[in-house]
Figure (cartoon, rainbow, N blue to C red):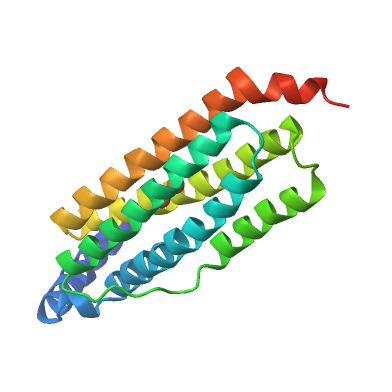
Length: 191
Ligand code: FE
Ligand code: FE
């Protein structure tokens, strides 16, 4: 049957592929290159976010959100240094690569500050959503990178990326809580 033939063919070429990649150093594979690029992207992103969170803290209205942004900033600094450990675990020098997505998300937060009045809960409600967009970008990125690290058997990198991922998820949940418990209802009353 032709189907059997095809299956046979596939498994043969698969075996050849494995042999070829075995003779190559892991660091030279396209997937490893992509993985490294992804790490560089996040290394840039975390650094850019440290600066943005300073501004967001300053411009937020409620004490609660100011504190959340402040705490998030120290967490972001920690992520930046955890990424350095990830690079090290792979025998690579940490390097930043411009992350257009994070630049865009930060620009959005800056626009919110321009478009809302200082001292309002409306501004806080909008800033929370901007910050959550950032968290979701980080969750998607670290989720994918941790998965790749697992596939490529970079055990240490997988562990570290998994830690960052969990913290991003926590931050996202915290922001939801602040919005629900304190900010959104008050924002709704504003005229
Ligand atoms: Fe982070
Ligand atoms: Fe974060």
